[in-house]
Length: 66
Image (tube, rainbow, N blue to C red; front, side):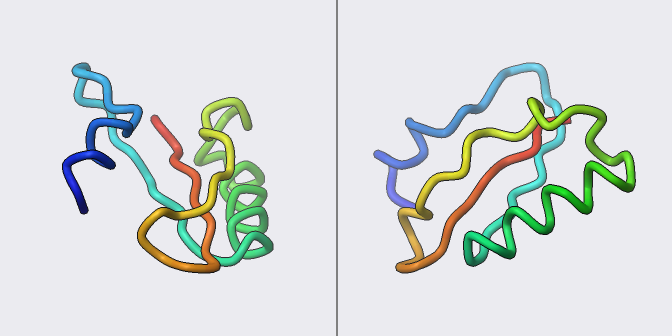
């Protein structure tokens, strides 16, 4: 990844784990719902907004911060 992209990542200094979900928009939404139903994520607000993946054409991404 480029340094410009790394500067834009929502990284905090409290060493919390992150799950990156990358795929088609439908795959990302399905995986977000699956993680919520399986109680990996206790609230959908833990996911960042779905954005186009800057490093993969036609793919989208979200990050779950735990």
